Image 1 (cartoon, rainbow, N blue to C red):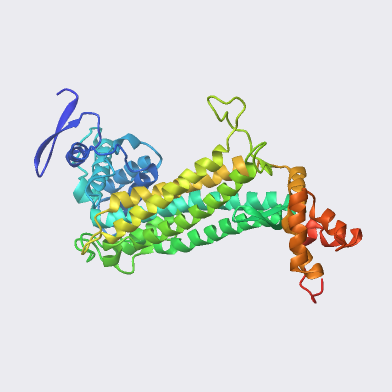
Image 2: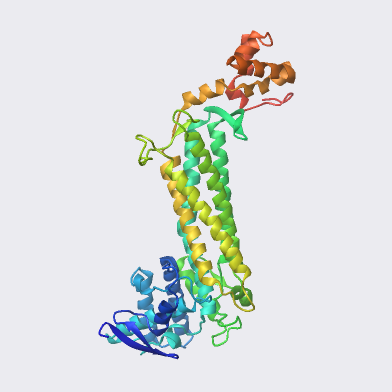
Length: 469
């Protein structure tokens, strides 16, 4: 008993660890939900503290909270925002669907720390009360949806968009070096007409660029906040200006432009904006999978594969095969992207499961959207820094593969016709000769004509008949 203290709530007494800042309701949640061991990420806890800080400041300005209590609450919140007391938020993700346990966890920790600041004693309820003062003008039902939006916006602005921008720039930088590096194009995984490596990379860059625009396009929806709706969206027990003022204060603290939700009933009953963002993250993930697959194929070998590029050797690739090195970063990126796609399925179904005035799948929505943003950002950064930036191009080998590619006979169609071009391809394959050699041997072209028509670089910049260049 020496390591515990006794706390009380409406259900009775609860033993709480003596050194914990949380109180009875948090302790009940710890005991009720030993499900996964997964807790809310730091950015979500910081967002909760930002919200509680903003609410205290607004309540002070509205004359509803005294300056002494407000100051202590703000100091306690600032400590959490600055990364202190992270171990004081142990409640599992899989809990009550409104996230009430986590909201009360924050209320109790902030109140206890505020009381310690004011009195020097770790008191949970006096002079600052978790419900009456820290949670003044709020409900879990508007605080948790607000925290989801705030944390998702912070993580997207501070982490994801810079990482995607960095990947885009790195691809463009690498692309600029290979405008004349011609390689075999591939469709259906089969040899096709030539492209430059720069052209191929431009497709990657375009995919990433579209992802940047897409993510930015979802942010206005996430900037609408549920705060001010309290229990069911009517704003019961709060000042009519509360939501707008808290949103403005949060904007000042985060430098992100937040605003009060246009419709509080929608803001609490659904998580449409988060679902939209998740769908855009899923689309971005599919793009990164495509780029990673291209890198893995192009790096395959070094003897029996395509071997057009060499990815940086980061670690030994086998516990039994000496010297083997694997494309570990693209592999990790693909796993991240598959997780993001899975998270989107959870978020979509969770959004559909809201009933009447509240969605009660909020904690898992929060966990999955923050995880998707975070891991997609980190994967994009790794792909840029440890794959795109450091890859080496085997231009000699690319040229050799291209010369052996009979599909380049396609450019002979306007000069000698499809049927004769097909004969050239068939003979080139059978005799293992180049298209140029066979076309000249069969008398279809002179050597000079063959050199001009079968220039691989020219094939990547075709001129339509009758057009001027």
